[in-house]
Length: 167
View: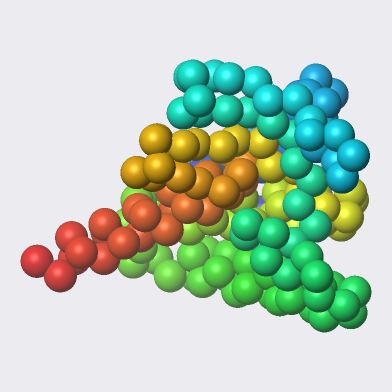
């Protein structure tokens, strides 16, 4: 079976996204003291107090949402539903030949980031988050990782592409 350039592009973006995320998480887990209930964890300043690295294990979804759900509901909402959605999105982008390269990149980034975080939940029972941005209270993020950044970037690209098509 010969892969088309388009399918190869999708696979490369997904695999690269997963690889960057997983390598970054291994480096964080191996080199930064994690935050626990009894230890505040290590905080590494990358750019003053504006951009900080730390090691936080997130048992929930975005910003820890869902971490207090009962185990069955957590498996359904944080593993089964995301796997089904990611599968449907992958099927959609492989079949819809009318998608432009920006949309393909965006969807593939979303899939790669989603797969990377689902992998963490399956293997480790939580997702390793490590970046935090605080621009003096004007803009402040939760603690996030490279997979989250890929998903968010993909969503932003899709918004811009959709606005571009409306003109």
